[in-house]
Every structure is written in C-alpha cells, then in structure tokens.
Image (cartoon, rainbow, N blue to C red; front, side, top):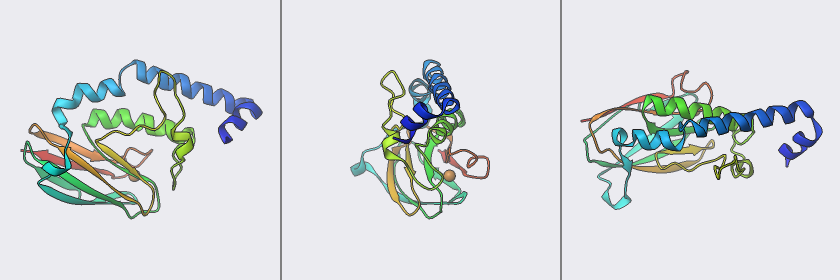
Length: 186
Ligand SMILES: [Cu+2]
C-alpha cells in the first residue's frame, strides 16, 4: 500500500523503486540468486530431514553477534539448528559460502530499500511482492531463517562434504560488524 502511494505520489521515490527493480532483475539474470546457490550446492550440503538429525544445536542471534561463533560437524551429519533472536533487530541465520553470503547481502539491501525488511520487523505483505520473472521479494531458502526480535525457528541441514563454510546474517552492515561464524566440516 505504502509503496503504491510512493510510486503514484512522489516521482523521485518512483524512480528509485523502478531502478531497484531493474537492478534486481540484473542480479537474477546474472545467476547470482537461484543459479548461484545451486552451483555452490555440492560445497555446502543440502536441506536435511528432521528424522535424520543426529544433533540439535542452539544458536542465539544478538545485536550484532552469534553465540556460539564456531561450529564443527562431520561430513554426512544432519543437524537441527534451533535459532532464537534475542536482539532488538531483525537477524538471519544463513549457512553458505562467502560468495553466497556476498550475493545474499545485495538481496537483503534491496529488501530493506523496498521496506520488505525493516530494522526491527518484517513486512510480510511486501515480502510477497513480485520482482518479475516469478521471483518474489521474499524467498524461503532452506539454508536460512530470518527472524524478528523475540522469534525463534529452525533450520535442518545435512553437511555432505568436508570443507569450511560460514554462517552469517546478511542484513546490511551485520556481517561486517561481526555476524559471521565458522563452520568446519570434517
Ligand atoms: Cu543480523
């Protein structure tokens, strides 16, 4: 609703929104969204099945940190992450490679520009906005969870191959200010 008003009412706002849409289409076309995830998939595992989880790990999200900051798993292990946001800002827990996080940071910045994610809340209506080509603004990736303050959720992940990964929060500025941790898979 707000967005519609902005586009109709304020010309500069409308131009900014239009630019944002063009930029996001370019990102999708370059394959740094869906394509990128799939290309990197063998490096980082795949969504796990709850009944196969061998361990439950609790992850606390704060402003702006993770506790714990280091995780270590065996290749082939399925882990259930219980994630709770104890901070006052929206945070995410996202498992991936550095490259994937860098790509996701651009998407998160775009979501904030459009008001789909605010500093302390998620705007679920704007998350449903169609960005063209069937891509919704908000996407439900199985390797991540986005949480408002006080909320909790889970990620079930199977770590298939050995190597090093990162868990990160890709909201603007959070990764840089310390919301990144190490995952070593042996
Ligand atoms: Cu964060």
